[in-house]
Length: 616
Image (cartoon, rainbow, N blue to C red; front, side, top):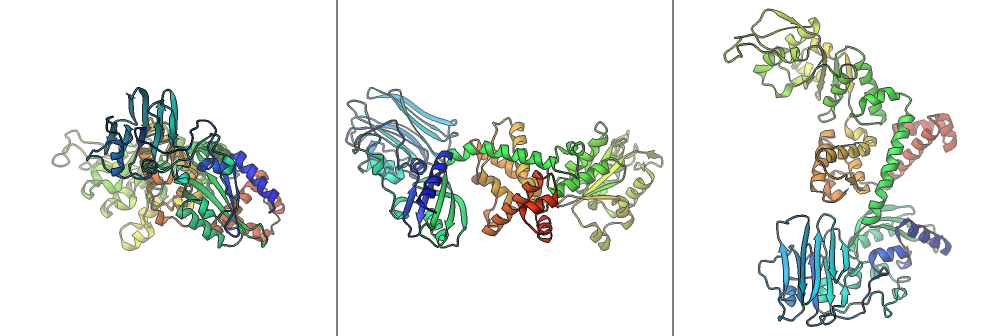
């Protein structure tokens, strides 16, 4: 990798809006791209300016902080420098203030909030010492804004920040404003209040080229313990090792891809690609477009389930080989009158699939769902088959139809069939064989025409061995079994399912559209989901409740990180290999022989990979 190659990479990453840092083998910086400098504030964007200096007595200080003492180097005692001596203000409070530095002739104007925020935007708008000043904190958009004399200064934040503007009391001229990279320059609000000098911005004395990075050790330029630790770990790894994750650098949270280059020459080292919140959100729409197109091509390449069948299962998501098999069987079952049993773990969507099977043939006929595990044993018979007038004490004088009669002409779905008591099983078997029921207290049969779909998450053969289930009933309900795999066995469906569930919830609760960050989607696909679809829905519903912005990050997902397997290099390579083979198959319209030849793979290896990645 020569100098020209590094320059080319830098040019490309700058055009894409990514920052790039190249660290040589000796740990010094070989390249620090312009975009990287801009993201971290090593280079101040052209525009507003002020000369270097330090805060002085009687200066006007305008201050906003959404979490006092967290990312501002401020202690509660520092507020006294602004003549704010309020014992009720605590660390962690949100505060806005317009004050005078070390001069008690001018009373401060301030607001603070401890536990309750009256709306998503906090604001002070006052005339202070003849200057019109507006201070606001937008808690939803995570933007702080200070407007002085019609000129607005803004700072976006991810978690917290103390944002400050200082005015000359005589002229009202801005002497200092905080900007990106305040941590690198040592210009946290608390340090400025404590008298630390600040550098000029966009003025003759401040030359961007003077910010030297090339040849300096990385740890002297990049501040962030976890980031530096990760870079050292990658530096100690073999060629091609790659790591990615969110790291705090210069007090800013960014997403980094860190790649080891170790070819045994002078160009060895580590390349670090950097994205901030804005660039990640900018790329989300492109990622969604790509996923949608990939899904469209997956459907077009599906030779086992034609489009006319697929359209019947729009609400039962999944295009993985496992789910295409489930939909194929469900479509076949819907075209018959056989008894169907749906097998699978709790939360896999058995109830939803039962309704889809029903809707294909009889969308206007009754569909009655019975949760067998929610019925008291003593009430099973009357609930399923109804009762005659006066059948027992407290019975309705007119009698009552049971679930089977309510489903007449349509479908009855008996969920958790394994919960039915043994004494009722014989009567249920009679109903399935003879298509007639007897109400409790009546000797007159009632003829019914009902499609029966059952479901269970139990091992029914084991229940027969234990004596909990009649074998003849098992044979009667097990005519057409369909097993729905758990989410951990169909991870290819997770991204699409999560996006669809998210869109449904946003529409249901009349919320603005939200999207998952790439890291959030990655966490969703790596997690095993022991509660299956039901757990996925619960996690997403909570996430949109706590997420104030448009993007759902990993912090919004109530998933135990300890239960997520590490995304090792081996796993990443397998993922890429599977993606390449799958894309080649789609390009070649499913022609395996042509794909095998294009990829240069032997027949035995090719088919082994197809089986391993569920691409057969």
